[in-house]
Image (cartoon, rainbow, N blue to C red; front, side):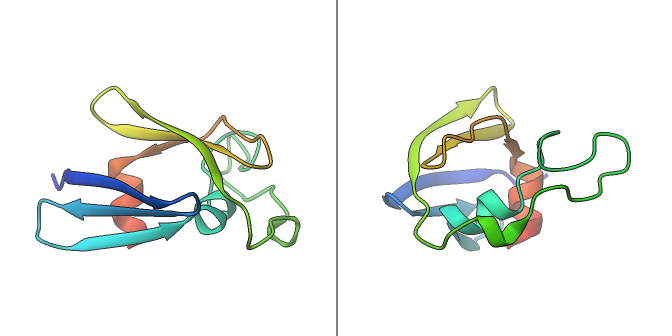
Length: 95
């Protein structure tokens, strides 16, 4: 399983992850907010997107970030959304 070797918040709106397969991914806060996997943003049973992506502005920022166990990241976005748990596997698939 590919794991992050380094996680860097390059700015208040840009996250960079260096992966164990020698690749690097960069994600903006707005991009991650639009693909949030939480039950408020996706139907819990079908996985269908509930979130209206057009409501997410490109100037969205991270206000906090934390590691969840050994498997995920959690973000607090400037729109106060904070319920998404982004597994490393999910983030790696987004690259």
